[in-house]
Each structure stands twice: as C-alpha cells, then as structure tokens.
Amino acid sequence: MNPILFSAEETEFASNGLGRLSEAISCKVTEERNGQYELEMVYPVTGKRYKDLSLERIIYSRHSDNPADIQPFRIYKITKPMDGKVTVNARHVSYQLSKTTVMPFETTTCPAALKGLIDHSVGTCTFTTWTDITTGANKTFKLEEPSTFRSVLGGQEGSILDLFGGEYEWDHFAVKLHQNRGTDSGVAIRYGKNLTDVKETKDSSNLFTGIVPFWKGQDDWGEDVVVTLEDQVVYGENREDYPYDMVIPVDLSGNLQDEPTDHELLEAARDYIENNMVRNAPSSIDISFIHLWQTEEYASVAPLQRLRLCDTVTVEHSLLGISYKAKVVAVTYDVLLERYEKMTIGETRSSLSDGIKIAAREATQELPTMSAMQMAIAHATQLLTGGTGGYVVFGCNGDPESDEYIPFAKGRKPAEIYIMDTDSVKTATNILRINVNGIGFSANGINGPYHSAWTLDGRFVADYIRKFR
Image (cartoon, rainbow, N blue to C red; front, side, top):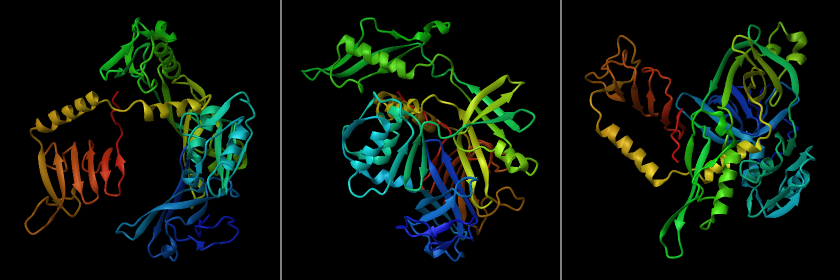
C-alpha cells in the first residue's frame, strides 16, 4: 500500500487527502507492546508530494498484514540530508495525548478511570476510551495533581496500566485497553523448522539477598543525619537459595520525606525488597525465525501460522532444552512490501505494572549520587590524561580502504580525523572517528559498526551506559 498524506486537521480519512505518497523509497512502522508506535519514511526531494510534507500533517498507513487496519501517524520530524532523500518520522496520533492535560480526580474500576480521563481533560478532547477489564473493582485510582493524559495511561507509578494491567491498542482516536490484546496462536517456533537462531542469556549481576536500608537528611538543628536499622540488614526470602549473602546498601531517602522511625524504615525496606528482589537469575531469550505465513509454501495455511503483536507462541529448541511460552512484544512492518520485516519475541509477564514500577523508581530514586559521579569523573580523567601511544590521522574525502587513498596529501583538504591503535586505517581495530556527521567509536575497524556515537542530528547511541547508585 502507498501511504496517504492528510492535512493536520483531518479526522475522517475518507478520501485521498493531499495525495498518495507513491514515490516513497521506504516506509516502515514499528509498534511495541505498550510502547512506541512510530512510522519512518524515506522520500525523494523529486517526489511530487515532497513540498507537501510538513510537521503535524498526517500519514495514513497500514501497520500490519491486516489490509483493513490503516492508522494515522502525525509527522514530528523531517530530516533533510544532502543526498536528495528526506527521512520523515511520524508518531501515531495517540501521542497527541502527551499534550492533553487531565485535572485531579478519584474513582474505582478500570472503565471509570478511563472515562474519567476524558471527563476531566482540559479543553477539547477528541479521543474515546474502551476496556474489557472488569476485575480490580476494589482498587482506587487517584490522580492527585494535573498530569498529561498519556502519562496517566501508563509510564508512571499509579497509572491506569500500573493499577489494572492490560495491553493497549491505539485505533485512530480510540484508546483501547485489553486484558489480553493477542491470543495464544498455537504457533510453535521450532529448531529445524522455522527457528533460525536462538540465544539465551542469564545474568546474576543484579541479584541480592538482603539490603542495608538507610535514610539521610538533616535534623531539626540542620545537622546531617544518617538513619539505619538496629539490626542493619533486612533479608529476602531468596537468602537460602544462594551459597553466600549478597547484601547491598539502599538509600530510601526518596521514599521517606521526614526522618523515619525504626518501624517506618523497616516497612520501606520490606516494600523495596518485595518490588525488586528476584529468586532466580533473570534470563532473556533472543530468537530469529522465518515468518512461514509470508512464504509461498505456507500460503494455504497462512491463517494458522499468522502472528501479530501480543500473540503468544511456543519456542522450542530440543538441543538447548528450551521450551517456553512467549509473546510477540514488538513488530516492524514494511508498508511498501506489505510484509513484516521483524518480530521480537519476549518473555510473557503476568502484569506490565511491574515494568512500570521499575521505570518509575529508576526515574525518581536512582539518580547519581555526588560521590558516584565524582568517581566516574575521576576514572575518565585518569584514562584520558594518562593515555600514551595511539595514532592521529587526518583523512580526506574518498574511500579510506582503497589502494589509491592517501590519508593526507599535499593539495587535499582534510575531511575526517581518525584516532587509532595502529597507523593505518586498513589494520586499525579501535577507532575514534570524527567528521561533519558526528563522533563515533568502533572496536571493529574503520567501517564499524559504531556502537557508541553522537551524530549531528541529535542522536546518541550507546550499547552500555553506567548507572550510578
């Protein structure tokens, strides 16, 4: 399908709008379970709709292999490089709710909470809500301060998703919260059939069996105070599962506004353990598989093999002893080729509220302490000021790996800087590359990939960021 461009004010989508974007070079939609929902399109400057592309206008596009399911995406960024191709980024129109404010209110049940968001919105709200979640009638939803509509739906502690769980579906201007958006498809992904790669990772680095809770602040006389428990350590139920005690200090000052009593600090510690402790080393499984329903061989049984976001599948690998149920947690759909480009299979969670709580705590409690930050600065300073050896090479325009390439020759102006572990771009492994497009580090030679980079369009890429406590 060729996506269609509409004006920013469109709500009906019953026509061809401003025209079809038939010259699009590529167009892909990525949706995550209760996460991002975005479209990215590459369009030539020679295309007849190029001048019509502008911020806030809407691209109407398919996002799945259901031909009747077409969704609106509002343009929020247009990048114009020099190669005659523009990259257009658009978010589903439901992101408008990030700029809709809801006033405080209190209610019970999930349907009443969703309806309350509409009733207590400031100004005009064109969205509707729906849910099939009727459990949790004894839970009270309470919005204590003005907040954005979308953040109250999910993404912060105390949100509707945090309280009632579920899986969101964004359908035009309707917000639908399903208890289970997908189905257990019965599809099996098996080694030797449609499973092409599997990697299981277990990580015990974040395990602990007990904590030393403490509170720090000032007393009534302005003196610094650190409060700990008389027994010092609070252990979790998993203590007996491991051969030695793994005890970590935890600052609970963010949970307790005033200097706590021994009982208050103990209760806060128990809450922390309940929300953060795990019995077993967390594991994750990354898999790659063939989407059989998209192949000619399986065309006749495609409905039986088809998968969509939030569907549950069975992953089996007899040699590795892996057999477990998992959900499709992210999909990327190629709009022009009308087929899925990528699907991500993840572990099934009993409730997404667990993930929301973790995100909320990381945003509010796990800020870097001054001592940890100073240690990081000292570490970086020691590395950079103590560095010896290495090679700095100025490169000119051209292919660095070609035989004719001369890094810096008379009469040629430098275009790049390479800081390398050898004196040749053909043999260097660790490279810091700086040019007009940004700064990047590669541990795999001149052509990357660059796992750590800061590009001129404002994007920062890092495969690991140290989190200080």
